[in-house]
Image (cartoon, rainbow, N blue to C red; front, side, top):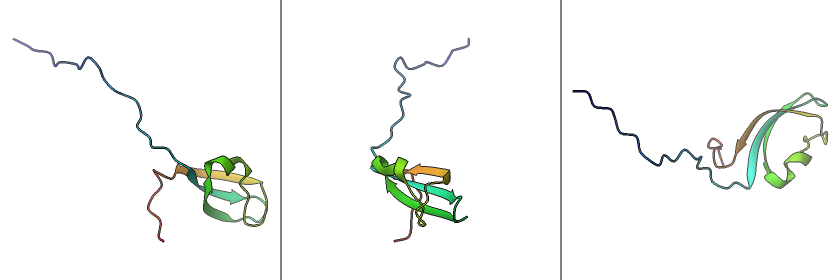
Length: 73
């Protein structure tokens, strides 16, 4: 006699992500040719500029503040 495993009738597959107000980005500045990392508010993300003032950035890593790795204080 073979029994099949029971499947729950309601399976919750929604993502559980906390709200975030800032993101950690890592980018390459095409003007000063430097690699940098910084934390910016979500609302100001699109206007992010490099330390030199350039907005010509190549963003290669983006992490929400709730999922960002621990940073040294």
